[in-house]
Length: 255
View 1 (tube, helix red, strand yellow):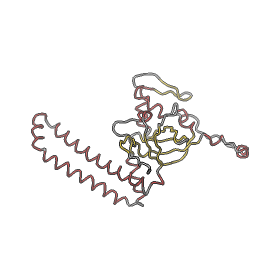
View 2 (spheres, helix red, strand yellow):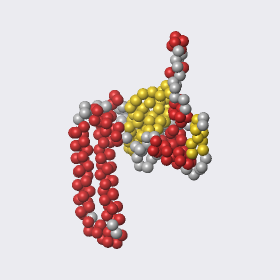
View 3 (cartoon, one colour):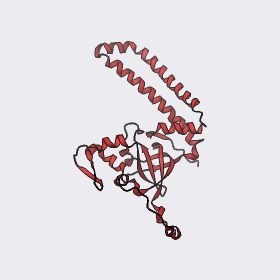
View 4 (tube, one colour):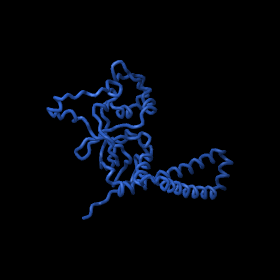
């Protein structure tokens, strides 16, 4: 019996910038053709939206007369949203095509994973800070350094774009990194721990587990010196805490 091919039926996260770069690279730098394809698609949608606007002109003028200019603004805003969605979805379908064909060897798909924050990491606090705004307390993250919980969420939004989550997949523990601005449909990073999703990701390096804490970011960053005796003894503990890091391009529900 042939293996059923899963399809992504709901998008939770999509990093359009990374996906576009991925497509351009696989195209061998022929970004002009791809841009023209996206612009052409957007233009097609725009023409359709304009035609619909003309059809609705009579109705719109009546509404405008009753509720004012806001109706026109809302209609224009809706049209722009449709066009923006069309561009995003064009990139999405192009990415999926490349990820399953020409770029398949570069993308790793983690299935049915439930990421979780490492204790006292930036992602850990990012999940809490929207609620910590209601408090005025402080937390000490390093000697002589305390953070105001009420202001932490705003500071994280302006000072950090990517957040790391741990994930246990296929008997391997990895770090999945997320662009905080790439979540779609009003999902947030805190929603990931409650969902079984498939993740499309690209390996970007390794990281020490201990370095994921907020304290390590502000504390002593000097690496532990490795002596010749360590190398002779082949002390495996030197690299045991190093795990692979993947930047996530796409995440969603697959069936």
